[in-house]
Length: 539
Image 1 (cartoon, rainbow, N blue to C red):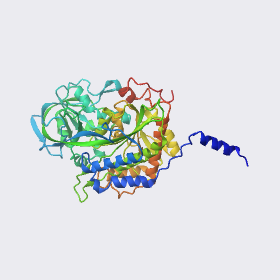
Image 2 (cartoon, one colour):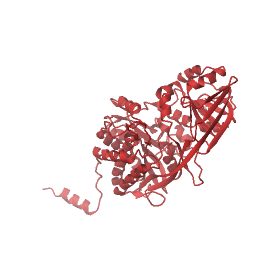
Image 3 (tube, rainbow, N blue to C red):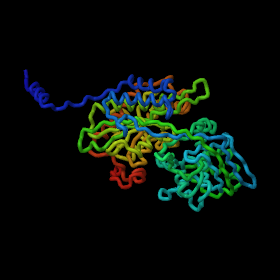
């Protein structure tokens, strides 16, 4: 017998040398268990500020406790509480358009949709109308829609979306900034007219259907709801059929404007509409208390433990307001599946003791406009700095996916970590298959991006059966009562989605260097101009 290996093993054991960490396994039934609880009717759709959401929040907190994570709430609990304002129209709004010597009054939702105000209980605005194309005011980026236009004290009319051919993430960002750009130009209200592409994707009846919920936003300590475009007093969407005569009276054809917008690179130019509008409406407010569920895992490396990798998933859905026999919006896929996979990644990461600290957050108010994530990003619960973030939102788990789309991966050094994670999990990375949806700005990671934090957000991909399954879910179940446990879940896919996200978080938390924006990234330059940058790939 050769005793040297045995003696060596005994020596290593006696000196306390750590064994290599075992490769984690991800149990499909664990993912199923979380989704089953979170999407149950007893939680009543997990709407922000409701009993059902609070039950879900306590469930997530109990999971964090079982993992041995530390509470990260400012009061020493697992909860970061915030006040959320819900605003609903109080009475029927009225939009009156005056052109060609006539006044046309619009108040029916078949013609116009008015967003309630979070900052003014009553709004009465009367001003001239100016068309400003897509409403982009970034000459530095080649978008100069306000050139030659004076919109100070006026109401700006813009098209929805962004010019075809614009990189999808840049276009999505600029699209989300239209009200801010209009405000900086001195406008007092914004009227949006859907493009032909937007109408095809979201027909007017569907737009009306999804507009019946309240506007929402977080409220500061002074009782004022936070607004990035506080000087914009009204936000309106106008049915193109109702807008056509307005353009005709100005000597322009809306059909031609929309046709130009459909062309790749098409950018309809702005002009005076030779008309005025008066907008009047009232809003009723209800303030509710909700919470982000927050936990942390201290890093094992004293030099890196002040840097945090964040993991986020929104816990809320849209509650109980259906009109048929099934009135509950359970949100099984959106976003019980995201929370479930985040919890399973958290369980594996907690056993690793990574070098960097990790922040875990199940967020409130995503469906109302990324409210909880905005509050957390602006009101940090960690003493250290969040240096990178991985977001979990609505992985569609009805098929065996073989690729993922990693939004944001091309903007920072997180990209190679995601690519390597995909390789280890046996899947590939694919480009954004739905750039028209502007998904990069529509989930919680984006509020951290706006604070300068590199982030990625993965969704299950379109390879093989993926495109049909994903599009079928969007068409038939997204934000509908049928997003429940009757869907044909593939729980193995849930385990795989957890695995690729785990490898990503593990790599980021153990890397020698923190994630860095690439030098050429628009988002790095826009939101973290003073941060150290990495050379662009291939340079």
